[in-house]
Image 1 (cartoon, rainbow, N blue to C red):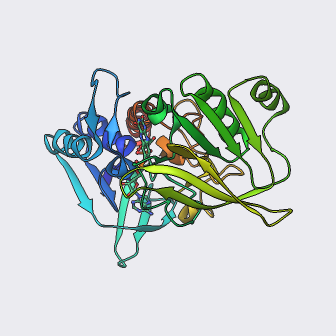
Image 2 (cartoon, rainbow, N blue to C red):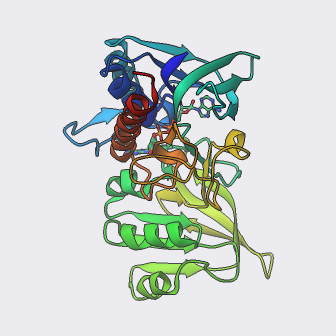
Length: 309
Ligand code: FAD
């Protein structure tokens, strides 16, 4: 069995595995896609001390860094169940291919995925104007016109944030009212370069073949179609944690996030969580890396307290 088994190979998982392996304990990492969301990212400009990198380059660097240590890395494995430890002190993780691994400590770092609109053009213009991360890509749209899709807290926060960076923001909400906190809505309404369109179903992202040029939406009350000319579309309709496989074993929040404390501990002793899959309030690479190291150090702490002398 492993002393620490990390499930997930994004920034959180890679960081957890490196920290665990550096303790000289038996470490394993299993991941469906090593690199995680980073693989889908173009420019990364906020990984502190690395002024500019690109997703695939960062994913390769994570793998190279981990490769310098004694850790078993298993790729292309989809975890389907976690069975918490019984008397033998070993947690078991089951995989889609029928395999199973056991470990004294498990770090859950399966990340998240953005909810998409599922309209024509969204996929085609991803990273060519369609983006899901205002913290990451806001500065790329300096002075331009953008839309934010979604009037929940994340959409309204994004619109307020972007209003200070870009030329103009149109917030498009499907429902007849925004669901964001009232204080955020008041702040948004006070900004003079922001328009809000309610009761609008986005129907298509328009582009010229290489870049976004606009979007169309349907006014849900009248059924009329309208076009907005703009260069960026920030989709903010939810982040879905990859935790469906954990719902019977660890405590999850209402949104399905793994509930962790400030040491990365879940409600199951010996099971830790890190990164976008957890209740951590900010979903960013540098945050995920810090959380991965926290979870691994907590796992090590747990190991030395629970293993026989
Ligand atoms: P992830 O990166 O999501 O990795 C999850 C890992 O778990 C993957 O290896 C996945 O294959 C694996 N996995 C999932 N389910 C299972 C399972 N059941 N079994 C086995 N393995 C599983 N952040 C920034 O800081 N700066 C940026 O510029 C930036 N740009 C972004 C651009 C885009 C397009 C996107 C989508 C995100 C961006 N982010 C950015 C956010 C950043 O990528 C995430 O915060 C970060 O990747 C989270 O790391 P993580 O390790 O928690 O999860």
